[in-house]
Image 1 (cartoon, rainbow, N blue to C red):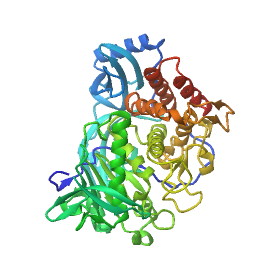
Image 2: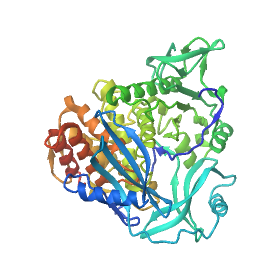
Image 3: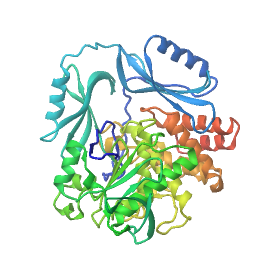
Image 4: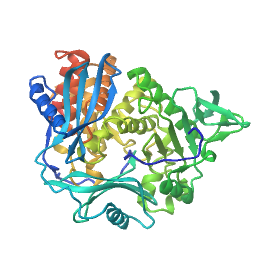
Length: 539
């Protein structure tokens, strides 16, 4: 936040960590358009390469990004975005792993049978008006409106994509460029130098990196290559809505202390924990910050005061008080909790780790926050959060001890956690693919908080081992002494080998490929990760 008054552009969608919803029976699987996965196997690679080369030559694929491989020297990952008649096909991407000029693997999911009129019948201005008309009063369009192809149930639509911001909400909206109908709406909030001393939410003393300026100390971490700011909001409705509507952040928002002995627990924990997460990603994977280029990270605490819980509608309480979320371009927000369902969310190390990891996803695979891809987005955050607990904390069942639960330190109601990686059914979530729910519905954006446990349970089985309750398949696992090997596998797959519209089957292929990349085709790691996915019903 060099400067430092600025506006957060909200250029990317984000992810709720917490969402309460009723459990429904049954599921509604939906095939958007006609997508096809690209094979990761050696046998299918030549045919896949021919298809990719043909699409590149025909202008149907564009190189969107190239990232260096921090895990295997000499390799790189190319992300190729699908194009139709010069327009982007939203979410369609090929991930091509290169070793010099040789292609090692190709993964991702593209769409075929595209045959449509790409001349819009309505203008982008009219589309913006339609989107704002469907939003709460005072809505504004943020950033550019883009014309492209959006896969929908049973086919495709020519649509305008725009980001709509208003009081309490940020949504990515797609408006049909012919009929003017809203064909998709995605939640834009992904829920869920000096050395100071301070006490965290639960009273534990912690050291924090601060910056001395103008006779006071600021919650600014300048010890790490990526500067990190912790912002102390006043908890008022007016300040929060100013931020949501304009993205404005000011110098006065930075948390300060006169003697560098900090007393606000959420400020201390948010500031300390985001530093721990940065260190973990660098030490474990050689990653330099969220974007791997040391982007600035800003954390907001006290976005809306706990006292507002009895005055605001449930959706506002559920988003800004009983919640924590990542909200694009390195911005994290941690609610106060209402004191009944949650306590201060910044007090949970795994909560901070989870949200920070949404930022990593935002800068890599950009998993679309809906249906299976959204559940995978949440799953990766849960996996990394659990792994970080075991990296920093001793195993156990108490506060500040490592376990396979998410948010257990800040959840106040039974069962005392949000999700469980080792026993998902204990929290009411699925431990097998046949139990997935809400796909293709508006409930929980297609089950993004309900279905992640299918993937996180696969990670748990690949490490610790065990018998899946539904399939009866037993997985030996690589053992806790080798947990970092599975961390490498899942990190590589989710950041380098998956595209925005990936499904559970794509995650299976990508993690198997990652294990083969790192440890060999015949390795125990590859065997265990493949068996773990089979055990949870993902083939």
